[in-house]
Length: 281
Ligand code: 7PJ
Image (cartoon, rainbow, N blue to C red; front, side):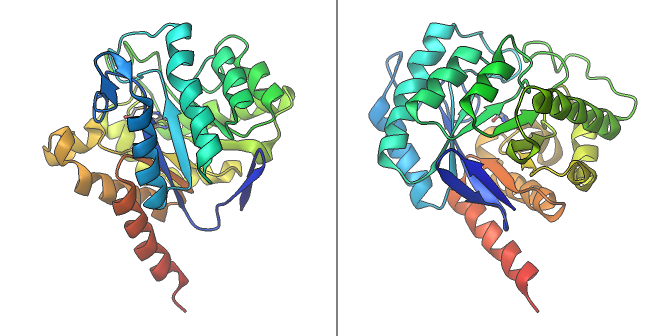
């Protein structure tokens, strides 16, 4: 399976790593360290990107809006200010697919102009004009499932059949995208671990991830250092590497093509082991 990302082609025959580059000062797991006073330090951001590319990341996901539960909203100007210079520099300096984690039409359009190759939207292009901006960009998109909005989504997640409901939502968003001119070959799907879901919901969505494959699009998953791992192992954010790797492997074994992670080197090693086993004859 191949995904055309602007002028780059992403080979998804075996799973690839998307490294997380947060440009928010309040990210729960790694934000802050790219900041000097209250300004994003571009050099630190690029050094972090460089280390992820060297460790084997195929994609760098640049995010300027924190979507963790209870996060402060960020203005459009602030989001553009954080994201666009980083996208420009990544495009200019690295041979890597540049993804932008955003829900805003203006950020999608400006990122595409600045050289982004991929749009990652936790709101599945439901914000005003986001669908049109994504279609206009011609770039592939990741449609993620979320119940509610980040500030309140973890208050009372509620489903009667979580797997079926997530699949139905993604199916409907694929149809909407296709009607807007985004072809199915440009769509990646994500169950949205931790976004309006209890631990049980998340675990069912891991256990039955293979059912999402029936939609015919590559699957992206993000479990890295999330609270679901803390709930299982008892580990604090800084000590969730083993849990993250274990859960990532569970997802890859059920068909995940793109894994969004903080710990690139370790995840690349995990995928090498997984692929070696898969390719044994
Ligand atoms: C995800 C994401 C995810 C996709 C975040 C965090 C929260 N995008 N952006 N999937 N999570 N596609 O990294 O913990 O799971 S932000």
